[in-house]
Length: 279
Image (cartoon, rainbow, N blue to C red; front, top):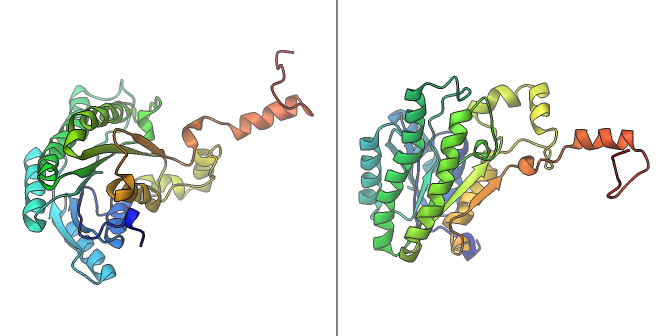
């Protein structure tokens, strides 16, 4: 294994790690040599996931510790337990999210505040606790999982997009404030990824095609696609990267329209280059 991506001896803490993107990240960290603290709301799920990772790796690579993004006290206990169990924390991945679907107008003030508190403030508080342990060890990597919902308006996840955009500002501020302590802070911004929450999309050929039709890499993302970027940011290979929001979406947010371009070609056959379309 290349030293650039070797996590041997490192301790990684991952929230929302029992399924989807979180599980993909936890599994990839274990594959690259790290010990992983698996966090999720359900204790049984944490234990089962840790057992699965230990069985796959044939070593004691993971431990499950329950935590709830909506409960700041449990998050503090989660970080404290991880540090006491393994002696240090080298990487924190803030993957768990609290989402209420709907437009801004349809979102109650209580849900708006709840989403901001969970996704921004509670993740920040957890990152601050982990950063304290990282400073003592000489540095570390904190990775926030944002969303392409933060990059453009969406009436279906309006407030979720707002708080995920706030998360990106948080990443930049913390990167500036904590960089001299050796603590790097970055965000991964996934597009559409195969998970339980997106099952309704990828199980429907028509719906899936409508979602990926204009994506340059013409497929849905897999948890491993996000995990690969997390490994980079946690490893020596990412040691000069901080304060970044790295989009992993197959090019979906580039805004290119294959369908729109095909219409233009039908309207103006035989023309190419920067021709004048005002005819």
